[in-house]
Length: 95
Image 1: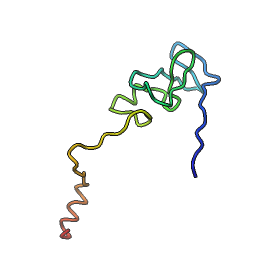
Image 2: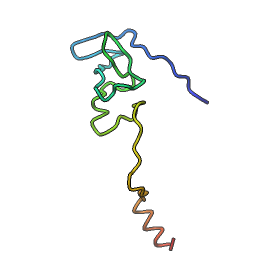
Image 3: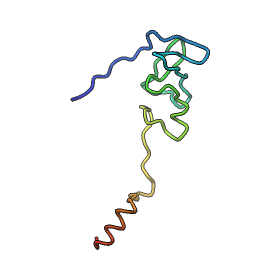
Image 4: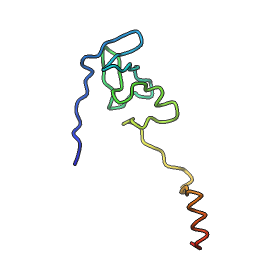
């Protein structure tokens, strides 16, 4: 069963000094890394992410997992990371 994508609007949002107040959540404008994402919604000439209120925090540890314009990179070494506990059990069984 596929979910229908709805058009997101920030109807009822109020611009304040702290940011954009939408349904009781203060939203910050998108950062430069967000440019090109399909989720960005424009409100009063500024872009906002309706999925995450603080986009800069999402990009702090690497790539935003909500970004539609960035693909995850594959490990260059090609090695598969194995759980050490499982590896020791396999070794004990002789596999």
